Image 1 (cartoon, rainbow, N blue to C red):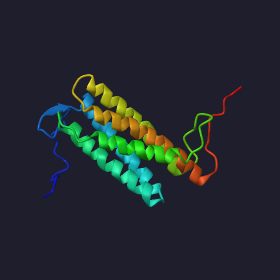
Image 2: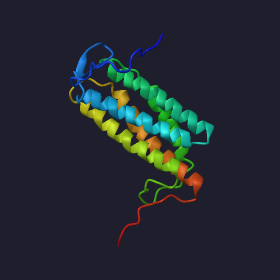
Image 3: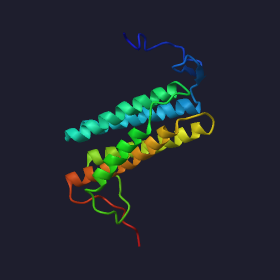
Length: 180
C-alpha cells in the first residue's frame, strides 16, 4: 500500500502542515523545526554514505538513517517514542570501537582531511543543531529523553568517524594552528 499518493496537496499553502495524528501545526513551530533539522541530518548522512568504501561503515550509516526516520516518526506523532536506551548504547559501543583506533587529540580538529571526513563533520554539525532543536521543543512539549541522548551520542560518533576517515586518506588530520 503506498504511503504517499500525492506529493502536491496544497494543504500547507496557509503556513501549516499535518502531523501523523492528523493535527495541524504551524510550519515554523519548534516541532516542525526539529523535523526539518532531522531531515537535513539524514540527507547529510546520505551524502556521507555514498563516499564510503567500507561496507561496515556504510551499514553503520544506513542503520543510523533508519533510526533517524524512526525518530522523525516519533516527532510526527506526539507522545510516542521510537528510540530506546539500547540504540543509545549501540552508538556508544561503536564510538568506543572507532575511538580506540585513534591517537589522543592534541589540538582542535579542523573539518576536512578528505571528502568523506568533511561530510562526516558537516553531518556532526547538523546533528548538534538537530539536538538543540529537540531540546528547544522539549521546553514546550514532551520529547522522549532517549531521543535527545541518541542525537548527543550520534554527534560524538560522527566526530570520531570523521577523524578515522581523515586518517584513512592520510596519516594526519588537519588541526587548528593557533596563531602566536
